[in-house]
Image 1 (cartoon, one colour):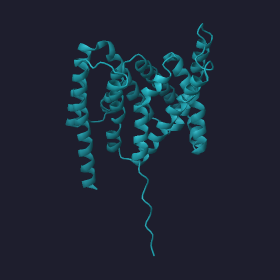
Image 2: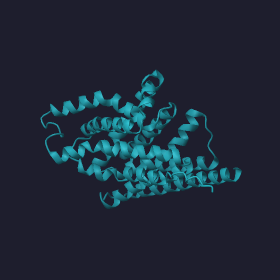
Image 3: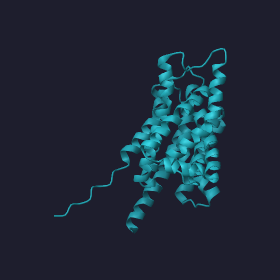
Image 4: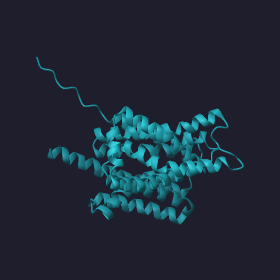
Length: 300
């Protein structure tokens, strides 16, 4: 009697989990709206580090963490990525708290297209005709925003490029997502602690420790930072790139819907047309990914 091997676990559930959490993050930020964005990012870093260390121990990734800490090249790369992700967190938190929800959504719609553009410009990768078309349509959307919504364009471009460059830097160093985030949080711990102390010494005092409920919500920032990244790391190992590339649009779509419904942000005509152009670019990009996937399967 022969027994068949159990099927490999799917990455679909953790992928959807990661992007759903990232998509609904603005609702969490509503709970900490009274906390200054700069101070909140400081506390987010402070509470992310212990949770990351705990998960690293549970997943037995401590050897990988120690190897990275002994590598000067890895530490320099993680220093750069730490700065980029800190900028990304700060701009995103500030944008949501200031009601710039659509600008944040556009930034993450643009991110995959920025990734392929960075790969072409910096890594010598070649774009297909469809990818060039998608980048061109997205560029038209950015040009439209520059003409009619210049005050919020910097938010979208900063979010898109900071996260794109973050991924590019992390691609150059062989450190896993979770050990990498742990080291990045450790690098940022000192400036984050200085920020928290500076706010604590101010006339308003620290946002942490004055109210038990608010303090618990601030502590929870470590969870909403580390958990989706862990889910994403699991999904990335189990899924092909094209499938994961399709699912990643779930997060900015949720943010866009929240902007319409929960935040009730007015959608000006220029932003609506820009969204439509970006959706067309996304459709072209995803179609190209799926066609490459089918071609690879036929070749196999």
